[in-house]
Image (cartoon, rainbow, N blue to C red):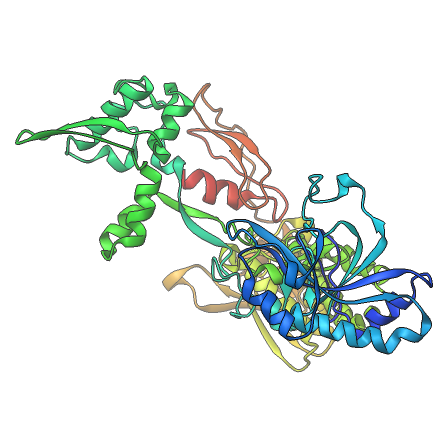
Length: 564
């Protein structure tokens, strides 16, 4: 909140709040003898006649205004067409830059700020802009009054070009759990339920008459087929056509409606009628009914054809535009949280070199804390997660390791930690880092107890309690306890026999070969960490999907293959 710099979405340039004394200092820094107009940009790009406003200005003693690029005496100002947008600057003062005008400048600028809601303009009288850089020349985001080179000042965090404003920057602005910072469109969720075209037409090679359009497939009413027949006459298709064979225009008309009117003929056996109208479209129809219905059943039925889509206002970042306009080192908070933990660690390590001395002085303690927490998450094997990852999508092992990292960061001692299989889901590559973390917890004065089947974890432990001898009613007894070597030396311990290699899982001498052509193929999987993955899984055999932690195994199998 105190280090970030707000940027204008319109210009991409930093937005700064300035005091009157800073504005005066900047103007006095211009070459002595420079002629300036001190203007208050009261109206910018708004429709209206503004007779009342101009009359009020005359009563207050102002004499001149600049309207749509031309200077006028207020009494001689033209009648404005209320159907068009206008720009009106009030001429507050005309000055020649000299060292002795500071007091006069301050008074004039304060007047501008009062008139123009915190904005003021210093326009160079002798520096006209080239025609191509003016609004008349087609330059975007230019006021009609920008005919000469000018400098815009703001006492707020406001873009003088677009009018985009930011309230006082404070921590709650960056929390989507706080109404002050949450995106008003999605209420801080980052997504909205939208009608999904892929769910409306799940099988593109199915014929229309065979139920290609899922919301209409189970209806016994002739209405839907008769609607399609009318659309078919207009767009050149038949009910026996496959969805994939329809033209793009026909598909768009069915899904999103038509602008032109179409003749529809309906008959239900009891009556028939013909009507000429535009077609609403399946998507708009479902969206309208979902919003308007009071029936929970109807809403649930429509939700079968909806899926979560990123909020169009915040692009999934969950924060209001004002929060996303504030950046550090070129990135807003949403972009930083999208980073994987391993990348975020590097970014925060390099950040102090990119900040000013004042920014570093403000941020030094919080940056140290952030870097340490990221290092803890990295040490427990979670370096692949993005910081914005939804907690509901984490595995049990990942959630437990996050809690473990937070405990390490707390620096508590004398605590008893009980962990249930923290290594679950971890690749052997990452297991050593987890065990180092558990040993660190022990070394700073804590007691760590884990339920584990992992061989490395058992052999690393200072003390092992082996419970058995079997499962269910045949278990519940302490078979062996002591160091790992004590357990391995106990002839009653099954765990000990596996640790010594006396018992083990035998590698099959022969493996079943998959039958040719019998397979399930997943094409272009993109969930979470998956990057457009295509893979074929043979049927009738035992298949293992393996890889490093966070590689996308569960997303590929559970979120993609299983749900398909």
